Amino acid sequence: MTERRIYLDEGLGETRGVVTLDGRPERLLISRDGDVASQALGAEVVGRVRKVERQLALAFVDLGEGPDGVLNLRPDMDRLVEGQAVRVEIRSEARAGKGASLRLSGEGEGPPRLLTPAPTVEDELAAVATRAQVVTGGVARAMADGAEAEALETVFALPGGGSVAIEATRALIAVDVDLGERGGSDAKRATRAANFAALTTTARVLRLKGEGGLVVIDLAGRGHDGPALISGARLSFGPDNPGVAFGPISRFGTLELTVPRRRRSVADRLLDADGQLSALTLALRLVRQIERAAAADPGARLEARAAPDVAEAARPHLKALTDRFGARLALAADPARPRGDPEVSPA
Image (cartoon, rainbow, N blue to C red; front, side):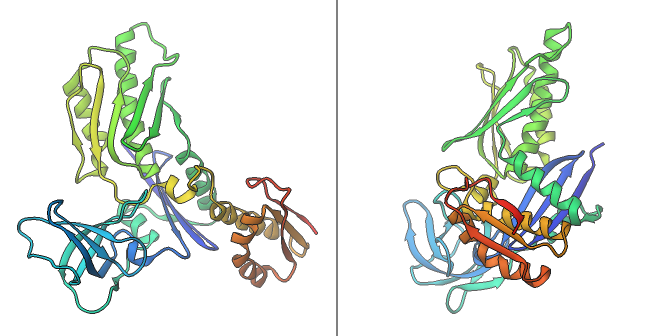
């Protein structure tokens, strides 16, 4: 029997939602100030066809802000022409240099603009766990911080022993199942149990990471019970439907499947082009750190010192902090501070 709970952390500059599955984070939803509303999953937009590639059966649509969206042309569609206004829905968000995937919903009129905004983080949480009560406050913030940290990890322990490593490449998501020191005198039974546990963990972690596309799972052992494992995989990846597809287990012991990509991955949200935490991510963490310190020590004058790019990204939120806690907070750019180690101390 699985249990899902939902958590909502509404902070300065960022709202984060977490869904847990049996106590472990399963989904992390992030909405930030400055997000382009016309690029968000579920938004309905009037766009203008910028280019039509008949040979590729694609149309590139100007959405008003951000990169062009991509519309797959089907034979049953009316013919589109460049410059035409269309009404479209964002079906998957832009990622890694690729534009958002669109669904044509009708004819448009006027310039590119947002018609209907995407569901809020709170709306999406409620849709995933319809009967769960939303938890807010400090508990939700701690849960969101933990979900962020786990989403950026690579190796995940399996219940009963062993581990699974999940790494995204340009072409696919590579998953490796490791038995480790999983106990038991029956090696075949231990291997089977590890593979089933790996399927469950992989499905949860990919939802948490927001990753998808082609997934290749290198199963432990050999001589696999293909029908049983694929049945287990269908159950584990059921929440990702529609759009999940499975291939047979290969003679090399790998299971291939495709999982729909719908939103920007957590890594794309939190990291910069070099794979490090972005200045904005670090700045929002600093804002939460200042907020905690100010609430814990009412009346104290506090100074935050951070790397210059982090301080610059955090500065727009300083006024909201001083409006709440008074003019006793200061923020200084310190080139000597490591980017990931800001300091908040008495002034």
